[in-house]
Image (cartoon, rainbow, N blue to C red):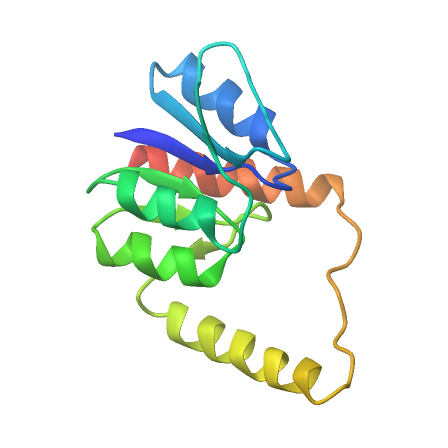
Length: 143
């Protein structure tokens, strides 16, 4: 098992790394060359900047039993299909039961934006988000 972080704009990189390193779990940070992120104790994989380049790299790196932190529903679906687990920065654990609705919601939102309308962005990050992430991440580690 290892932790793989989709690190472009990931607010919990340091929290996830701290927990995984204390438990002796290897960690990989994947980012594009516009968001280079390096942390002691973790391997950093840098990909060219481009649509989905980090996601494609993660999909190719992930193995059964790994845990991926990502806010991208499409990547989460790929991760689940490979027998790995995934969660987002707010502690939402992606499962076979919720991923289809999340992907459909993303599709509908994109259609709305393409029609010229605006969709609401995420609310500001809170301490409760960090707490929920830690709780969810620890539960995945204990499975």
